Image (cartoon, rainbow, N blue to C red):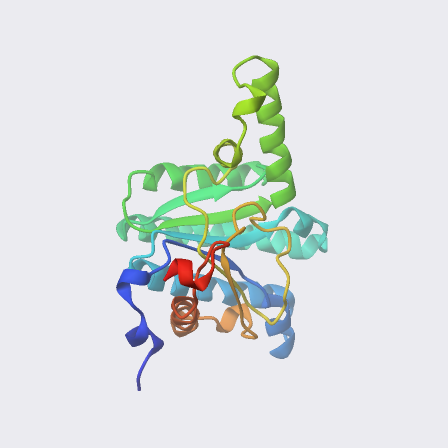
Length: 246
């Protein structure tokens, strides 16, 4: 049986793919189980997508793992998620390193101290790896990120390190938590929802958006290949006309 992978043009791969991993809870309900069951199976989808991205040669994969708004979910679900994060990282850290994957975390830093320490260890372990950079948005909010950037820029202006006239889009980007990587060319959202949910609002100004009804635990390699094939069939104009691009 043919695969969407066979249709992918290696020379037109997106350098950075960002994903909103949605639908774990609905997947669990569909299977007659609690929400945490969906999150546990969502980890399997993460493994599949990370492996596929690395095999294809994608440079950056950013996964919306936990938003600042998610802290408002039921206490038992949050506790279960934190335990799952901790257990998954302990299991996957050496595998990531062995596969030349670099791990980076972006967010407001408000994770429990023990979990933050484990992520710090994994970031340190993998910091010199040269393959796929896997970025986890944890306790992440784009509005908080933008607000933080504005504060940093204001402090530099106040201290005389930066002139107001020098502030442009590049300066703002350099003050974002994502300043170590390019903006995503492709943003994928699973589960049939059509919204951005406070995710990489500055960075996706010209990203191609791809929405699928597939619930996240069912999103595997083939689904990623399908999204990339769809992306490669689009004309990216960046405000220009088709004639100018061609």
